[in-house]
Length: 299
Ligand code: SIN
Image 1 (tube, rainbow, N blue to C red):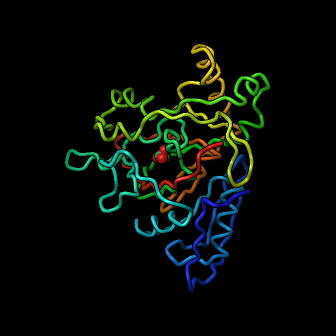
Image 2 (cartoon, rainbow, N blue to C red):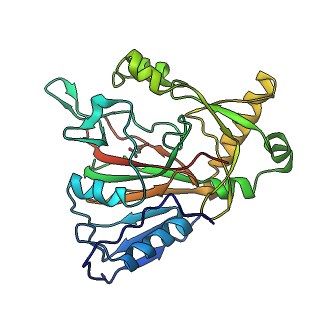
């Protein structure tokens, strides 16, 4: 399979680290312990991480006391980083980092407080969506705040045949604006988009079933957050099929629930998964920093 999207740049003089990869007993995910991403990464160690990411789709790196610059540097080794359209929530000095936070400081939100409150694959509303995202815990609530991940390869593999027939070879519309107005009304996190921002989030079309560019595995590529319509189906039928696809995708046997620990860095594959932020009580602070790596045009 082609691997052109990965830069795989070795750190000169990096010493190998002795770390362990523990796959979870579930539909996806693995924990990585004993690795310090603040240190230069040897090529062999990087290759193990790339392989584990393809195999498990979510990697949980424990106890990473890394700076925003180290977060950006590590992310960049997998490809160019995407700049989120909501520049209001870029971490100051780091346009590659989106602040995901419910904290209000001096009357102003420091981040996007309702980020990810619906199932989605990051940036699927762009013609070139994301390879993967890296979310680094800064401040965690004592209760709630988990993130759910659903395995879209399993969703495809187990899709009932009437749905397979309905979607094979079809394309669907992905829209950043699909839920934006609704989210804006529900809470006060989302700014009104400027004409320049609107120009960056025009609707796009992607295959309903995509092929992972590196493993060759098929995956469903729709989400309740951004997918609005299957092209070529009457509106009612498209709605009904999408609702069935969404419900099937997030069946319990496809889902891993991540309960965050201090200094976790979680790296997921947006080509294989959708995810959802479950939220936490409003009075408890939750702040994480996210980088997002550009991927390929889905096929
Ligand atoms: C996101 O969708 O990137 C945010 C996920 C989270 O806050 O758990």
